[in-house]
Amino acid sequence: MAERLYRYEVDTDPAALEPGPMIVAFDGFFDAGMAQRLLVDHLLEVSEPTVVASFDVDALVDYRSRRPVITFDANRYTDYNDPALLLYHLTDRDEQSYYILAGPEPDYRWEAMVSSVTELMDEVGISLAVHAHGIPMAVPHTRPVGMTVHGSNERLIGEHKPVFGTVQVPASLAALLELRLGESDRDAVGFSLHVPHYLAQSTFHDAALTALNAIVDVTGLNLANDALAEAAREGRLQIEREVEENDEVREAVQALERQYDVHLRGLERPSLLAGEGQDLPSADQLGAEFEDFLRTRDDSSDSQ
Image (cartoon, rainbow, N blue to C red):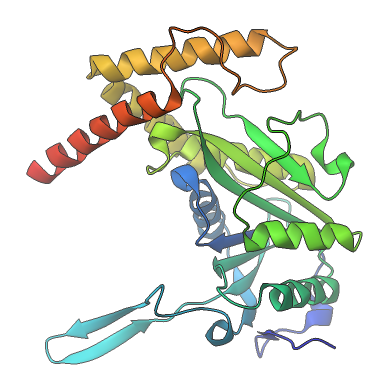
């Protein structure tokens, strides 16, 4: 038997835990618009989570590459924010159980981690692992949030059409877990939310809300979304105010809208990324314009 990298809390009886799906949320991999972080924070805030198991971060995390925070007060250290990789138990609005595995993405022992997570899933009765995160795309914020759906079984993907062909991308532990679960005939599904690239470093609640709705559809959970929907509405209003105040930014968004709409009408095209029309600016050009815009926002915020 492989080495177990987790332990149950002293007041947790694994046999007494109710089965349910698990949301996987490792920090460290790129998460455009903070879609994953916003989603997990929302679910932990609207429920009453309990920790049922924790992983051995000392064996998994490189502290020198991601130094934890320690508090220094006058002449002594008073508090240490030690990293934690935890499995939470939560219930939805219908009292259905589900789980969230959240914490820093391990730097070491990915295969051992996958084995331990799989063992934990079997012990608790977790039949489905779900992952959602944001990826930057040349799309406007004024259109519905798209997503790339991937999973270990076609029935989990449903009618979602692929956006990409065959590509090699940097690996993440969540991706490896999805792959390995599929190889062992277990269910795993992921949602990569298409976040406007000019909002990749901001908080984009619309992506988190889209992720929550996708998780509801695939799991059947009844998850509270009121606070997240309100935050998304306020976020859209703030973005619109900032866009209207800058002519160059507004023109860039309008160009993205035209490109998006043209490709949406071209249903025979396999990808929204395929270019059409020579007069549209490239993603790099749009990105540079928005970087200048965001830098101006940062400077004005500092001066207030």
